[in-house]
Every structure is written in C-alpha cells, then in structure tokens.
Image 1 (cartoon, protein in one colour):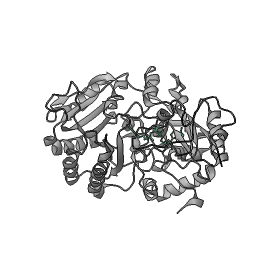
Image 2: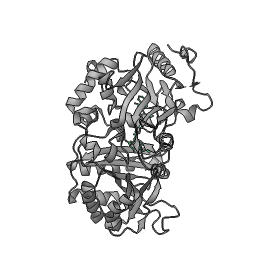
Image 3: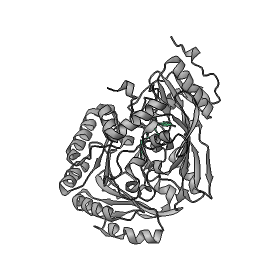
Image 4: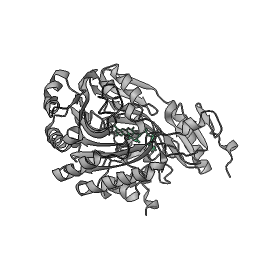
Length: 462
Ligand SMILES: Cc1cc2nc3c(=O)[nH]c(=O)nc-3n(C[C@H](O)[C@H](O)[C@H](O)COP(=O)(O)OP(=O)(O)OC[C@H]3O[C@@H](n4cnc5c(N)ncnc54)[C@H](O)[C@@H]3O)c2cc1C
C-alpha cells in the first residue's frame, strides 16, 4: 500500500505539491468548475528529467497518471483522482529563430505566452482563441485557431516534438525520427507520451491585422447565417471567422438595451495586409448592415484575446461538437431558433468554417480525423450554478441532436466531453483508429497514458 511519505520521485527539480500543502487547491483546479479531483501528488516539472521521474514514480506505485498542460480540457483529464498529476506549468521556455521561423516551445506555455513571444518577431502559429488555453493539449488534439485556413491546424505546423515515453525515456518525434509517433501526436492527443517541447514552423503574421466582431440581432439570424455560409465557402484563406450565438455582455461598447440579450456575433481575423482585408471583408460588414461593427485594425495578440473575458475559469461546463457536411436552410433555421434562446447567458454555440489549408493537407498525413468538412460546430454550454446542471445539459444535448442529420459522424476531440469509446473511434474513423492503436501498442502498451480521449492498445480493446 502506497503512503504519502513514499510518494517521492527519485530526483526532482520542480515543486511537489501534496494534499494540505499551500497552493494544492489552486494547482488541482481546472477550467471546468465541475471537476473536483484530488491527486495524491502534483509535480510541477521544470525539466524533461522531472517528467520522466514522475512517469517512473507513477508506474512503480501503480498510480494513475495525468498531464496538466493549460487545464482547459473540458473533461478535466489533466487531474487524476488519487493519482500523480504531471504538471507542465513550470516549463515555459520559448526560443524563436527569427530567420527560419522555427519556434521551440516548452509544454507548459499558454497561447497568450506563446503569441507574445512569437509576435515580438512578427511570427505566429495557428493557436487557441483564448489566451489561457495550453499550447500542449490544444496542439496534440490538432489545434484550431483564426489562422487555420491560411496555415493549417496547429499540428500541421509541428516539425518536431521532444517526448517522454511511457517507460521514462526521452525521444524525438519528427519526420526523420520515430515517424509513427510523430504521425500520432498530430491529432491523436496525449495518448503516446508526454511532450516536453514542441518545435513549430511559424509564419509572418501582423503585428497588426484586421479583426474584431460584427454583432447582429436574432431577427436577422436566418439571413445572416445564409450570407455568412456563402461568403465563407468562397472566402480566401486569409479569412478566419466564426459565427457565434452568444449573449451580449454588459460592456461599455454594447448599447445598454442590447446588453444581456441573445445576439449573433461574426468574429473575423484577416491574416493578410489590412488594406486587402478591408476590401475582402467589406461585403460581410455591409450585410444588414450590422448594428455594431467592432472590426478594426488591431494587434494580432489582441484578436487572440478578444474572447477571453467571455470565458472565465471555474464555471460549470458541458460541451459537445460535430462537423457538418453541409448547412442547408433547414439546419440554419434550427440553429438560429435554438441558438438565440440560450438557457445560460454564458453559453456559446460557435460555428467555424472549414476549407483553406486545413482541407489541403492529405487525410492520411496526420492522425487528425476530419479535414474536409465545411463546418465545425461547437456547443459550449457554461453556467455558474450547479443547480442548473440538468437544464443546461439537456439544452446542449437537444441542440446537438437536432443538428445530427447534417453531422459527418466524425468529431473534434478537443471540444468533446466524455462521450464514450465509440465516439472516440468515430472521431478518427475505424481505419485511422486501428493505425493509432498500433502506435499505442508500440509506445504505451500498458495504457498508462489513459487520462485523455483514449486510444486503447489492442490488448485492452472492447
Ligand atoms: C476556453 C477554452 C477555449 C478553447 N479554445 C480552443 C480553440 O480555439 N481551438 C482548439 O482547438 N481548442 C480550443 N479549446 C479546447 C482545447 O484545445 C482543449 O481543451 C485542450 O485539451 C486544452 O489543452 P490544455 O493543455 O489547456 O488542457 P489540459 O486539460 O491541461 O490537457 C488536456 C489533455 O491534453 C493532454 N496533454 C496536455 N499536455 C500534454 C503534454 N505535454 N503531453 C502529452 N499530453 C498532454 C492530456 O491528455 C490532457 O488530459 C478551448 C478550450 C477552452 C476551455
């Protein structure tokens, strides 16, 4: 029987935090306030050797392992109940080679930290749309962001990863070394090892881009969504966008009578020159026209933080997601009706366009399971009071069920709750899932990395 006193890695340069220690509750908290897990040890790592020491410790004591990147996974898998939490937040080193555009980023960075460092050199990689999201979890699940139609998903820009394996070794994954592992890391999540550093190819972006939000009333919903759909299907790669069913926040720039009412936002980020963006985005900005046009030249880092205030840590969260194969008027009607009658003012139903660079990467180039869907729909229900769990979860499920006729059957794992093994398999499709299982068999046959959207080794199948 393991006791707390025995739970000590052989060597460790970071901080070890145990139940009762100052900072324990803060360290175990994740974005989703529904999650309340108490690991036996949180090891805030400083080096890859620290990570390896915790992997070995967890194995020796037969304890569940979890990996904490930015803590934004909605399932709370970053923290294992009674387990060892391998906390990457002490590893925030970043180096940018301005000449080649290669960025080495340690796995504890958030996107806000990453963007600040890369934008100093006028560079960027497709990254999370909320600045506190972890680089690691997002990139491993593929990584969707405003730049994806121009530069592909985050994982499409990964050129190399430094990885600690299930047996505590440190290896490189790239096209040249351990290419099976490299393939699996690009969309297969945290199943195959713990990435301690990512090497990305960054691109010239900004520092000023044309971005912001257009805000429309619900009455314009059907016409707006149709217009946005047709606009996005023909839009150049530089246009990053989202259509968001939200509740207008109580902020100064929102007219008083609109605050607290359901609205439809069109978020925009044009990643090319601002003057070009003014021309390309003009039709969208003239449509209606929108009562509120907040689109303007702004730093790329500001676009990356536009939605931060609307996504506070600690609310109750229930999420699901689907790719849509098309968006006919019937689907739009259902979406607008439900989206403009949210149960909680914090809830966001967000439709992202596909196309562009993400759809041009060959399907079998990475583990990610769905390249060509024209739309990616996220149901992000958030509310403050646990007493409202039932009605918010029911709203989300009913909404997603209504749109199922247009769903491709694949799923975007970064935005999925715990929806069962069949959903994980269908996210990749059976063929890709089998290939991922073979990689799992090689790199983690005992499935010690199972606190994730899990790819099971073949011996644990069924
Ligand atoms: C407010 C909010 C906004 C979001 N916006 C976006 C978005 O714009 N685009 C998008 O694609 N997704 C987005 N997401 C989803 C996000 O990508 C996933 O939740 C992702 O898992 C978060 O990564 P993390 O490191 O913050 O999370 P964590 O909860 O810390 O990690 C999630 C899982 O990733 C794995 N993992 C983390 N670090 C490592 C590592 N170093 N090595 C191996 N495995 C690791 C583990 O399995 C872990 O359980 C958002 C989530 C939230 C809450």
